[in-house]
Length: 195
Image 1 (tube, one colour):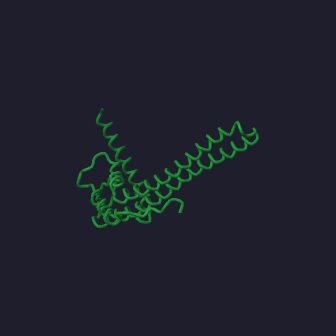
Image 2 (cartoon, helix red, strand yellow):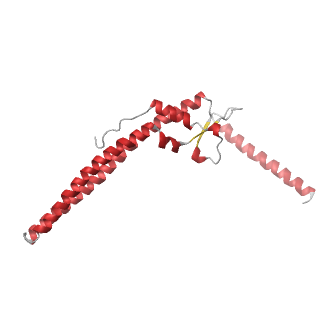
Image 3 (cartoon, helix red, strand yellow):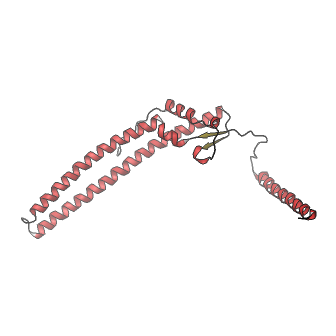
């Protein structure tokens, strides 16, 4: 490449760079709150998956949801057994009842099956709902803890660990945040679903 071409390319790059900076400056001029000059960026990393796995309050919520689920499963098992017995009784009565009476009994049985299925779906939705509300309360508390800690340590950016490729150990704040969450919210009462 000749010297004149290199010079033209360099000048083009400089002018292109100046054009970009003037566009950026024009956008910043329109901004009501331009960023302060000389802001020091302090970065921290948090492992949200680790917190969701190990926080005392999350374990407490899981335990309560598990108990509700077991109670529902026992209730549904009982109803399934009743349905099985009713189906056997219906099969036994097939020879005794008239075709019209049998068809009516069959319709009632099928209606009962649909009601039990609907009940199972409702129970599942209710469980998901109370669990989601409980987790939302934890997330609100966790956001307050992270914000307070960031303010105390002059941290300007907090990234999730799963969004990073390489993390220097001193940047991780997971253990501190988890400890504060466990202290601030060790448990949470999850109301019975459907209440």
